[in-house]
Length: 122
Image 1 (cartoon, rainbow, N blue to C red):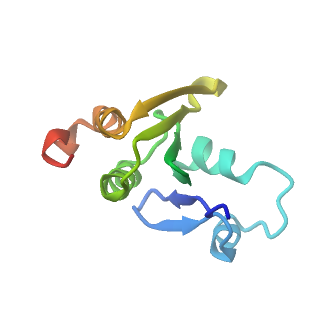
Image 2 (cartoon, rainbow, N blue to C red):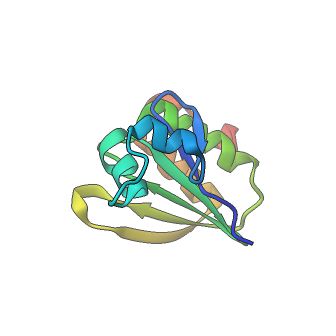
């Protein structure tokens, strides 16, 4: 059974992709567009999905909110996944890379220098 993805908002809060609160927040009960892409590209959200035995992070570095990045970093630090699929939606292009959990944490930290030394959290 697939677990619902989590969306980490600009304030660091998290919402499940299947939660009514997510659509409420958008003010659109029946969207005819890709909600996940809209949240990531336009609203600063970061998506984290568990894909056994790995995880997937989807973000847009230009809009990813610092608190959302911190929240994803904390969650990812607690997961025991060997690999992370890292999807970047910058400039409308989707780029993917499969990296180790440590590399993913380093990438997230590089997006937000004020996060400090990632080696202390790995």
